[in-house]
Image (cartoon, rainbow, N blue to C red; front, side, top):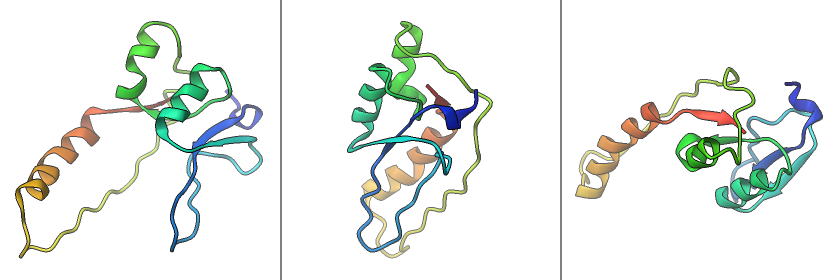
Length: 112
């Protein structure tokens, strides 16, 4: 698939104090910007373009034929750094530090 031919669907970057960040979109690729990840899923279901999505959000849509994976080989690795203050370790933070790595290794992201 030549992605530049297809409209990319992206969630708007809401950063206020940092530069806008664009990922998984090509420079000359037409794009549709939506407000939320669920809006992105709905745009995919409406056939408005292609996008990367967390697999758990679209797994049922793929299984039931509403969406299809068009480029599973187009995955990329990213470094995720988790930092925290050691002197303020609450239960919620402990849970996040334990569970987030599991989520990141269990869930693949695919183009739909």
